[in-house]
Amino acid sequence: MGGDVFGRELRLISFGESHGKVVGAIIEGVPAGLRLSEEDVQRVLDLRRPGQSHLSSQRAEEDRVEVLSGLFNGYTTGAPLCMIVRNLDVDSSYYGEFRRFPRPGHADYIASVKYGGYNDHRGGGRFSGRVTVSMCMGGAVAMRLLERLNVEVIAYSLEIGGERAKDFTLEEARAYRYLNPVRAPNEESYLRMAGAIEEARREGDSVGGIVEAIALNVPQGLGEPIFDTIEGDLAKAMFSIPGVRGVEFGSGFRAASMRGSEHNDPMRIINGKIRYVKNDHGGAIGGITTGEPLVIRVAFKPTPSIAKPQDSVDLEMLRDVEIKVKGRHDPCIVPRAVVVVESMLAFTLADHAMRCGLIPSVMR
Image (cartoon, rainbow, N blue to C red; front, side, top):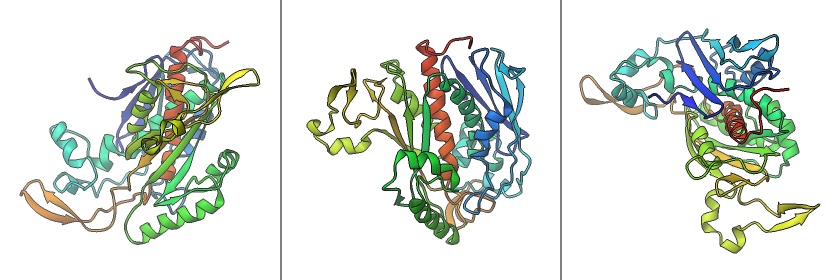
């Protein structure tokens, strides 16, 4: 069985390749009666679309969504939603050589091993960041479902190229993150992050970074221990995004250097409700949401396609070679990944909310 399906009650099926005719998604389990429009999906897709600044790939894709099924008179029908965007600005001329000279940091070589050389290598095929279009399609639907529960998902670039955002509030991040091309939470961090990306781009190199995402008003009780914990499913969701190298929740890896007396979150009765005084647990304990903000950080590696010469091999002659990667590539994938992280966080929460019966099969 392939690995193109995510979710249990709400299921996202991803299809398409970077330089194929289309990329798209089939979403099964969507309740009937959800008010939804192509514009709802388009708003999310526009946030990851390439070519919007000199700091991203100049591939000029329109990414105009077409809903093929599952939507009628502005409402979901309960049938599978099928959505596509067409690949229009495709240039595959650089990619033929990578079948023989695989690019370091890419799946060119190992994908050809796994699929016997039959995989579509153009633009990275199924291993391209282009496939995140389907994740954003699923995220757009999930965000509409989560509105019923008043759940809000906010993500932003926390760190890029070693430049970390500081001294910002969640309100600032909510208002500013999509007003700047690097998705920084405030102007001061935007200038530093943009400078790091621009420096790497001038040098023919790339940088990575960290996306932080916060989900507010998450209901208590989401998560199915022990193998379908909320953190486990979210980690799987995040690691499905190309380029992700690490995921942490709450205090994350910092917890390893803390004492229990420091890490434990005290509990108090506040306004008649049980609350945690702080949130080092990041909104989940025992694999179950606590009702506190769900805090997740996702680390992305530097874009592997760089203009600098790199060591590779000649698969035909079995000798060492040096290659230079041509084409249109992001010097940093983090800014365009912010909405993808939001989408996969929203989709996972919506799926778990449906498992708990918090979202009905027919919306009324």
